[in-house]
Image (cartoon, rainbow over all chains, first blue to last red; front, side):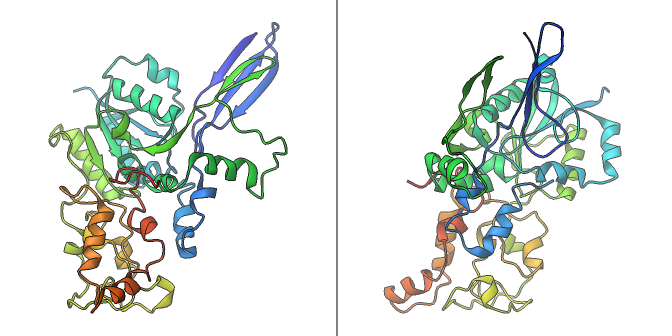
Length: 63
Length: 317
């Protein structure tokens, strides 16, 4: 089975990778979209002053 | 003379540093006159395989933004170090961990649990966490290892220059690009695109030596637009933060958030700020000092807002 890897996905904010598997005839058998990045804003915003949160989460995506 | 070869990459970042480069606006055309960009995921479609195919040292200057959060970040940092003559830690995340570095106040397992199990928008009844290797019918997929701690770029590779800011300002970026193009590079290890004074040194607000009886959260007071914000009881990081941003926050009546990090010779911005606070608190007794200081909500998160991984603490216990 032939495998085509697109890494990284470009011209967007963040990290992404696409894995495409082709059958013997060259048709797409299956395709996986992967996001290899995690920062954990969901957790590290906990316990922080409410007025801080807009300034922190604006760093989820600066694009 | 052949054109410079430039690269820019983001590890654990938000893309704001990349957009700050684009914020030089029409000067991007001048940049294209002197440089070819050979890797820049936000703007151009080069792949890791392209970078791997470059000869060692092929890239003249790589502006690397983002913290090192996982094994992919470390791998690409090492790849770009090998391929670049000059590697710049670009922005506060690459230098000290930045906002993603706040994760070092939390435990790795608690982060994964919150994101993949507990979050209200997640449906994961089988409680599946991301795996570094995952078998699918067609083959094996891989994901990077999510590290226990956020690291700084200099923790994993040798770094030539440091350009602070969240993000660095477009004006400073353009100035640094011109310096790079001229070939007159500063000594290795230098902080570039910034001053070695503190923001306080450059601030035009009136300082009277007034001591602080109470600390306020920004919404609790109407700020006097002419007077020192720290003397008004706001936790302004200006006394311990490197100048170079153009005092953007304090000009907008907001206390300095500290994103340019400490000046040369200071190894821990938060510890330095504790020292600075001690000199402005107006307390007659230790008990009163305790009461005043305890009015600061979340001191660790405030004093190490952009730099916990690069500080002496590195992480919470």
